[in-house]
Length: 290
Image (cartoon, rainbow, N blue to C red):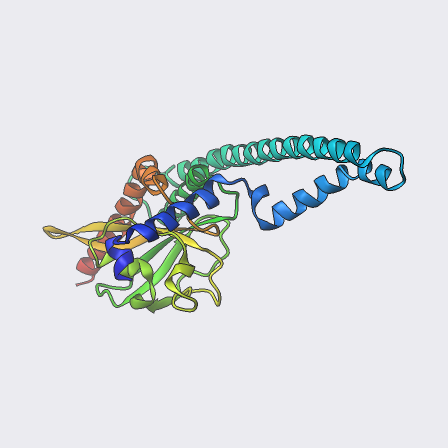
């Protein structure tokens, strides 16, 4: 845990992390285990005709090997580029459509001028999380459903309990379950400098050492944490954090987390402003009731 917080890793482990980052982010999905097995099987069948002809004595073994090898290479090359183009086109189309939808949600949530009421504020926060999800998918080159965005806040004024208050639209994972803050990796990030932090692969913490506070089993592997601060008198305090988790390990490796912060900084700041507005509204209500 200390190594994660301080980002203090030795050279051998940095090389391992770099290798994993390249594998999970640069290698096409067709080159991973099951995709590779399918690819080899399909290509092997396509290039088997000359070998069958050799078995029946129609052509020589040398000619059969040469023709089969040429078919194998050609078919593999075509399949590789065909799969790569379909994958990128599908991701691009999905992301462009979702960007329009999520920004529409955000505009609808702000259609009323002036201070938002609780329902409008909730809708605005969810719309912001939806925008973050789409841009995160764009940056990490992942598909719909691979990325989940949540807003986790401290319960009350203490830092002992936390609650997942909001999730991105379409996310069916539970909300409003209060848990011990110590069970949240995001809490650890918040109390150690409140800087954005990344978990590249939960499994690197050791089997069973990290569990999901709201699920029986975590189906995500990498997480990006962005602590949120609000004004409290003359100082700023951490009120909670935005978490962006992904089913793929090392999804935020390299400059991807920085790209999310740079691209989505207005959205992240707006979420903080909405939290501040809600906090101020509750303060006014308490004052009026006295």
